Length: 574
Image (cartoon, rainbow, N blue to C red; front, side, top):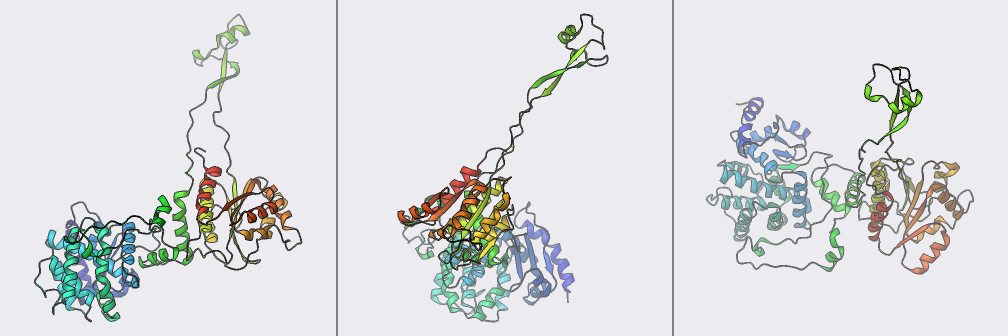
């Protein structure tokens, strides 16, 4: 009997052949051939016998399970299949996320099974290319996997019948025991879908997931687990960035029976954009933070709620940030005369200033009366400007949404302001506030994006009391005199707690606010969601000297933050 060490050596020798199945120029580093399931688990492979990690582009195999499943003589087929996830579907992190998102959209109530369905769909496309285009024995791989099944799965039967149709296999070869008429119809549609969407696979993912929907409801948990064991896994490397997932898909999911590309008898349908979509204009729709978090976790990322929220708002804020300033190298300035010095023998003759020499003495004595002109370069570099620092206060009282669950435009606006300021070199102090003792802030003025976003994505949801002590202490004793600072407060009518009560020392709030405004040196802005002109007039009376910007919809904060950042921080050169 061949040992696992010998098996690993034999499979490693077939790796170049597996790469050539996808082309002569495909380069992927050597696979991780784990000799035990325990070792495979340490590499992140659980619940299956094979995995392709999109983050670091690694093929991981559990050779112990390969032996148990009877696949030891099919190394090229198994390895080439895993390479297919790198070359064909999903190929990279961004498309992997979009594939999973599209599948989740088609499985309401069964989103927990989305990774398995997404992998099934990718496996179908890859195996079809290898079986029909490269002549590999993918049907034999699945014949053996089906024979090792420990529980009957309606989903697996549907999938195997689809493969039989695609590869012109005799009925019962991969799905023994026959299939119901409804399953036969679904498999015919799935096979047709795999063909027509082979070059546009993301567009077909939702339709395939729709066909799988009813089988998920029919299968027991044991049957689902058995199916998952026979499906290879695609995951990202933990901590890897996955861009582009905050945006939500707006294209409707169409059942393949109603898709004209799949069913020639189906009539094409076009739906005009909804009023909500039109109102959003070019901004597009976005998924909520909790949905974004579920998607990242199903991709295999182990992140805290705080880390997920920070990623979400950083990505949402990025399109609205000011441009990076460009450092330009100026041409040297003109040479300007700066006086004369004696010219001595041995120096270049062309350096002699004959007019200055003649003026010194009508008798020219080299090295004695000869003069040369001193020249200096003009300073053509303009004085550099220092960006204004930002002191940001964001309301987190009970009337505000939790930014880790639902979109908080206060958090998003704060992220746009803070990230724009730091992009041009400014320092930012971020303070999240709610009740009297509910305050979260950065360690003073910082240039750490993560620290700022960790504050902005926090949540209290308690009463409303502006942190006068933070405002007072920030500007006490002229501490900010050398760095002009602009104060920005994002809130609603609860901002009146900044002016009307006294602080814990008995100093009126108006006096604390006025003193801080004067000491900051670069102004202050109140960005408030106010629904009536009366409220606006009342706050204006309480806050002389402050610039009050009123919004009537929280979403308008994004436009304000982008415009404010451009006005205060946009610089073309430094």
